[in-house]
Length: 119
Image (cartoon, rainbow, N blue to C red; front, side, top):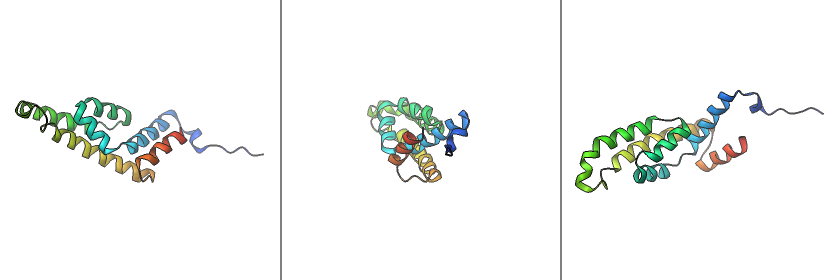
């Protein structure tokens, strides 16, 4: 009897972590990122950035949020928080779609299944 080896078993720890981060990026849902960013400010985008390793959307959203912060006194932060959340979401969504193409995944749900079944 020949033993079949899993192709992922020969990968180093760093390579496996890179794959996990790519799958985590592919799992990101735009609506969840936007709502989290809108209601929690930089907290939820920071959690996603830490999980995926994609820090650019976090920093762009935070920068726009800081710039629009003085305008928040006008509308109590209801309207002025939208540009920061939208910019970060657009960047993260773009990165997520790129990773889905790279992994041949059509939806975040398929990436969820890939993460669970692979690791």
